[in-house]
Image 1 (cartoon, rainbow, N blue to C red):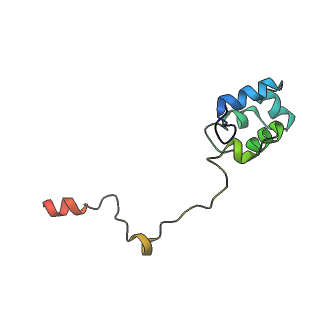
Image 2 (image 1 turned 135 degrees about the vertical axis):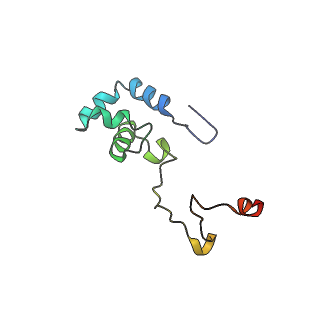
Image 3 (image 1 turned 90 degrees about the horizontal axis):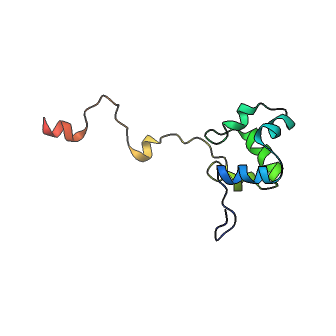
Length: 100
């Protein structure tokens, strides 16, 4: 769980730390008034309230527990002025047109 810059958290180390402190995901979900499913899906999908509850219980910043999900960024929209016009999926690519 340790690396050169500090603890590296993954699903197994988070669950292990919860168990070391006498807590399960189910009990934590019940204690914050959420369903068990909210917590069981947190490993594959973003669920901000569940992530925050886990981080608060462990007293670890949520950014440290889930670094790939934080900080929250805005959706990026394709900029056609910067990157050029995207071709449709059915359009023949340049190499296909050259071969014809």
